[in-house]
Length: 109
Image (cartoon, rainbow, N blue to C red):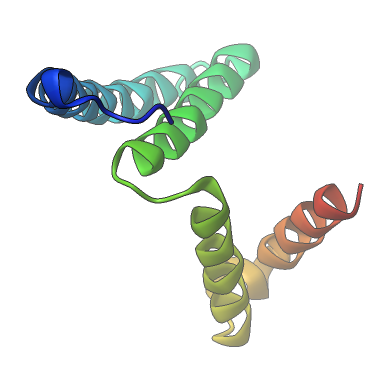
């Protein structure tokens, strides 16, 4: 991230706040797009909506001062906690362990 110069501080704060509001709207729009695509089971649109949600979440994290690394550390911790707590998704399908393995394999790649 570029350092803020004194003369542009107000402009940068305003721009950051507008960007945060825009990203919040992107999240809501992404959820709406996902739900609409799920009705007729349009795989490409479902994937696009999910990707938009992931990008918006990561970008919002950064705008809120949370690094991508910190976000992913918390993601890893939450997944492990859900596995340890025997979350229903894990018990029924093993999805959380599969996600944990996938993320770990990406890090090792």
